[in-house]
Image 1 (cartoon, rainbow, N blue to C red):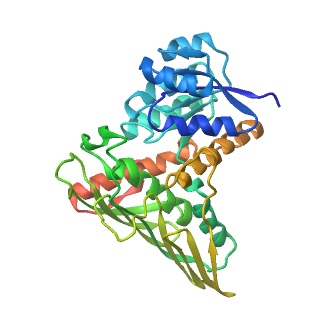
Image 2: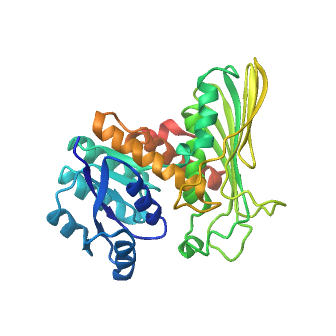
Length: 344
């Protein structure tokens, strides 16, 4: 198969990781980049040797013959860019959060379905190798049928230094971080029927919530707790690790700080190190996330080659996005929210 020609739209904070990822993956390359900020366009273009640079997305689509586009802008621009790609029959990857509203997300999925265009949301957390290791244990049946899970991301890391806009939004931790942790819960325990949520704002210098606790009923019969915090000062800072507890009918899984995986099942207790690899361009402690970027982008290339639907397709991500919306509704009402009503 000929190498796929891709373009990156958005050269901001996280996009550099995606550019490194594309450089590492066989079968695809970024041939053009686009950003309205000329300084960011120059920095990324010079760093990765991309000569074709555009300040306008429409001009990019007109000027290039593309096999896919990687949209790494902020959520308010996603719908217009995905629909622009769909109209031109260009498969699209879209950064999370998928869209500003669930209605926008539905419209984006509909546009791509109608035009026969693959759409994947860059929901990369489930692609971290420690998370994949937990899923592999479940799939092998080593702990029987899971009935309880806790997926936890608690930290005091200053995320605002690199992304200051996060401090100004009315919504913060559920929309920015919780969306990943909710997706992990879906990935490990299946789709959710009901969610109950509570939030708090501990840091009074920010506009949104920095603590969220969510209780979920899964269609499988399992129950999970998803808890997120940027206000938890711990003896050893765990950022950006996701810690996991899964209880099953025949055993348990514990993914603890330091990427230690303990499985207690029918064959006794096995402790293993599932630390993610440190890629040559990566840096600690971000290396687990940076590795997952390569993994999800390789998955995209494989899906385009085989015609398979991506694991985090637009249609699949609607279910994760609906969880975010339901969590905010539940936090405001202090009532459980049924997902069926949002997904109709």
